[in-house]
Image 1 (cartoon, rainbow over the protein chains, first blue to last red):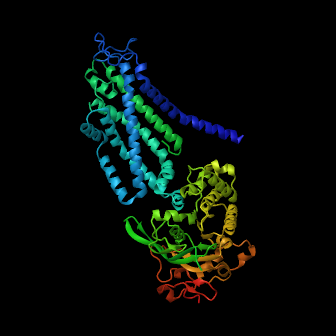
Image 2 (image 1 turned 90 degrees about the vertical axis):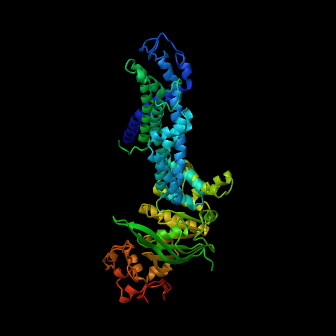
Image 3 (image 1 turned 60 degrees about the vertical axis):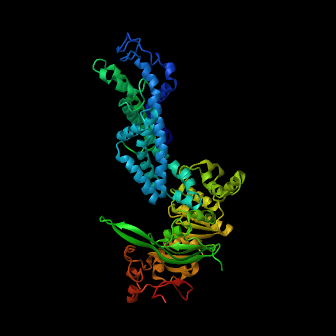
Length: 283
Length: 321
């Protein structure tokens, strides 16, 4: 039965794509749960110090050990999820919104508008994103808000460029011409016909950017330009414990693994989405 | 006599970059083209690929702005109207595109594709729109249950029917059809042409029907215009043109129409020699002279203008008179 064979093949393809998306999505879902219910799940208070148990290696009592002032590392990692995750998500969404708007306007209208927007975006792009983030964090002040603004600004250019290129491509499509000949406004054409057809590439790019945002956010936290101690932000935890890594390596390893896992979750999700929507792209 | 559409002296040039050195050049895609279409009339516009016929169509529906000339639609010159000025006027002239795979938004449902023009122009309420869209679906031969499908679920012919339904939704006076059947299977072409002919007869709308072969145009047209390298070379009533083509290029095109009669194959065929010259460097004088069996010395110098031939056709040829 050819039809049954085709059906089985379809199902198999869906399964193989599911591997990435399921892994990434599952991991991400776990982190979201930790971010939402962290304080309820964490076994200890993140600020509670046990001065008789400093820098203890993992044990039954403290699964990931304790830090240099005797706080439970597992609890701090769990509660700290919400800082890293919310900074990454808010920054990625804001950068997505800003980048899509700029890229769409530049690509659709072209001409002088395009040159101004592209010039602005290229200017942002000439500064390495970490340097730009440091500059903004220095100007706005070291805080979660400053960090979010900094990451947003550094992730606008790639989205804007991607969107601009896609819109220029779509503008040549007959269905956009058809929209013009039916008498639609530019706004309607952009929102109803251009944007929906550009959304896949943007969503994929954004999920990959979110992984990057976690890294940049943690790096800035590490440098003391983000969330300030004693808040249990992973980057700040890394920064605070780097002096002790020789005598208590688990202080560095735990937040490091947490950061890597969250980046992995976003990247797997991004790859999974790309495989789902663009099966033609071979890696 | 009033016309739905009068095109007067339309010209369009494009800047192009050629070669590896990035040389800038201009191509004259359309050069001084004039014609008129009466209400309910179909003008077939024929020519080889690259002769500028699609550019003419796009200027008429103002997807392109002409460099010079007028596009008089129902008496009003819209050649240089802005996007905003054109929007309310666009109800009256619609377009059907060549590629039904590209002209429908792949993310839109078929019902929405036909409804959207009504929404954009604020025609009717939700119930009235539903009724009209259902009527249109029936008219073009699609089933009402197909409204929820997306374009990829339709065949090429069905998609073109959908595109026709969308063009009809606003009840236009003119439809510009840019090679509406050339992307379709031959067996489907006739169905779509017949559909367009029936709709024209029912609604009295006018077509500018663009095609690259005369065979397709013969069935549906009242008059036929022939283009070569951006200019009109002959324009005449269908009967006049098909029974007595005057311009040597028209004659060659007619010779190229396949005839389903094996006996005809024995007749000597005056097929064209050579290729269409590049529009980057069109020949001097009459652009057709390098391929023309009648070409004389005058043709290389002097560009012929459209003149009335005794047969009734208007012809741009020095030696046809």
